[in-house]
Image (cartoon, rainbow, N blue to C red):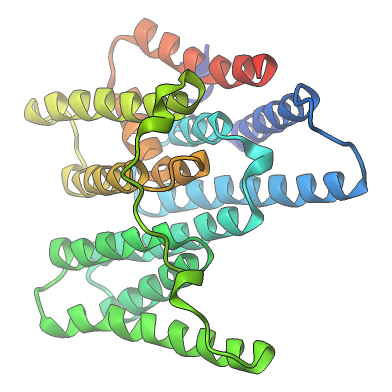
Length: 308
């Protein structure tokens, strides 16, 4: 059923995913004993949900603009399910905004493969990702993805390697200037930088391990299937999909060593994992298995929201 519904690209599918996320959002609030319903809760919820739904539309735009899949909405469905695994209401608006800015930057990085207006695209990508990094430090990992895109999709000119530095410098100057004007002081490095966390003791509890297990397990399965399919030459968009595999690897690594008590860190993984999983779904000829996996992805967040 799900494979049939999302096998096409229709506006109704975006509304279905949005409605699903809204239902999970409501269930998380209703079954959370610490929830206090008031006007501020309503405004915060509507603002956050609106930002998440906009990220879904932006994700689909990036996918269609860069031909990351065929004419279907599997990637949108997987992305919505991955977001639903996270505590949606606890996601800060700044973090969702950083996700949107990252998508804008990655869109420019991927479009480098056309070799048109390369200079502008590199600068724009670094510009958007640098702003996202100010909102959430770990999004800086996508600057690494930008340099890989420069190496992978463009001519290997040293001038291109310098352009991201200028984009970052522009944001740094603007940030320093704004900080001096409004707070009359220089910002501290510790206000932006977050040190890696190598303490995995918090993962001993089942609840804390759940999100990493889902994300890493799905990443491993999809990566393995992708590799097997690639060897058999069943994937037509090898270069761009291999680039998405790389983004998935670096984002998973970053999430593993990010703050352990903040499961929202895994929002870094949602885009590349959704792209890889969506492509695996469209290429899988065993529809019964695909249908079962999609239903598991859809129903698990609902069950977790009820049982929290």
